[in-house]
Length: 278
Image (cartoon, one colour):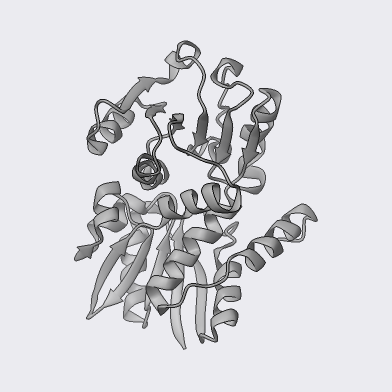
C-alpha cells in the first residue's frame, strides 16, 4: 500500500481524494490518498510527519504552494519557473517538487473544451501560488498578452517580474480594471469566494468572444461564473476539468501510468450537478 495525501487549509472540500481513488482503481494501484488540513505555520511539520510515517508523495493546494517549493531538495524546471509546487514525490529521503497546474489547465481548455488560446489577450486575477502555477503554461500555449492584477499590487508586480517577459506580461492595480479594455481570456485565480471578498468586476472587461475560467469549483466558483454569464461571455468554465487533468499529471509522475480522465470528469460533473459530492 502506497501513501499519498493532499495538504491545504482548508481542504475538506477537495475532490482530489475521490479523483485519485478512481485513478488508482483504473490502474490497479494499491494506494491510500487522504486530505490533511494544515495551517501555514504547521505545514512543514505536518509534511515531515507524513514522510516519517511512510508517505510516498503529496499534492499541495492553497496556501502552501510557495512554501512547498522551499522544502524540496530538487524541483522540476516548470516548478522552478512557477515558483510554486503542487506535486511532491519522496525520493531517497528527500522531496522532489513539480507543478502540474498549468499543464492541467491548458489540457482542459484546449483538449476537452476545444478552445484555441493562441493570440488571446488574457487577464489573470490573482498573483498567489495558483496564479503562478498556470501563468507560464498560458504563455507557452501562445497567448499574446498577459495582464496580472492582484489586490496587493506588489504581488502582481513580483509575478510579472518573475515571468520575465516584459513585452507580453504586465501588472496593473485592481483599481485599474475599469480602464484596461476587454479581454479574450479572463482567469480567476483569487480566493475571493473563500475569504468572502467580492470581486466586483466591471462588465467592460468582457465581450461576446471572452472565455472566462475560474480555477475553483462548486460554491467557490459561483460568483465569478455568474458574473461571466451576466457579462455575456462566450463560455464560462469552472476548475473541475483542470483539477482532473492536473491530478492525472501527478498520478503519472508517481506511478508511470497516465489515467483516463474523461470517465472521472464525467462522474464528478454528474455528482456536482446533482449535489451528490461531499
